[in-house]
Image (cartoon, rainbow, N blue to C red; front, side, top):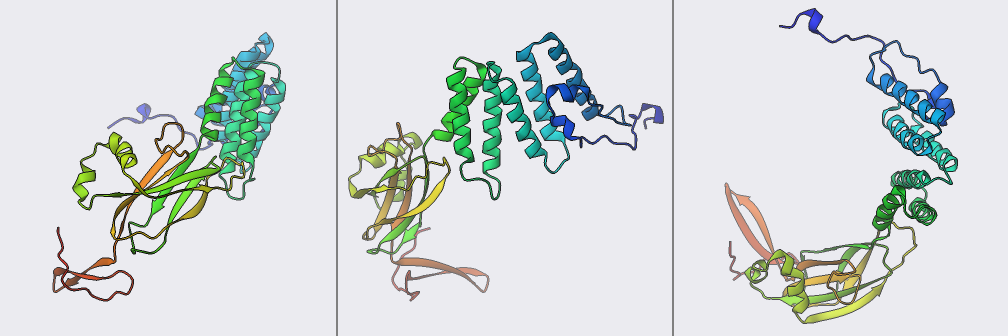
Length: 313
């Protein structure tokens, strides 16, 4: 058992980063006295280290090093501060830092963190509708002003993620035959999608034997039983939107619906998704009877029992 002398020193005066000066301009930050009765606190020691480091860069007039340390300091403050308005303080500090380094290549890296801040805020409840557009504008401006900087490369990566097209697709696994059905889609940065339905062999093992990377080419090679395009409402806000599209009635059979941002359906330049579904008037209902699992086959729409159906397990 360790002796008392071997235990780490603890105090009852824990340091909390609750001073808004943690987000102040560099000159005000380095001169503020962050008081703590716990001089072993890691957070307090980190703040003191940032103060000494940034004071040295201010004295040496090393703008690149100062900007780098300042960004690290602000991120540390955002992650460790306990104020309820710390996100607002962080955003305001980035805006001030952006103005301070406007003509220096470091400004592009500040722009990247500012754009990231807009993205984080965009997904909060009651967020502004065009915060993602502000992030895009910020990244484009930084790339244009400081094209060869490290920050411009960061902005280009974020810009690609914000501007790339995305789609997802959901269908009912089984739908009634000879009736229209709906498919749910989510989309981003697209004004038009192409849709086609192909029929696959009734034996599921045929498709299951196709390698994963060959599934899309396999489905694309099958003749389309229906095909059309849909115009989408794109508000230009870089957000994900949802809608539903209608598929025309189909006879009993197994199908795949393919959804793509291009008429080629190849997934090369635009995203392509596909989903299986079956058109069937049958539904299987399972229930327990005296400890044994029983199955009944019924009409999918009316619930009436159907006789003479063979099940394979």
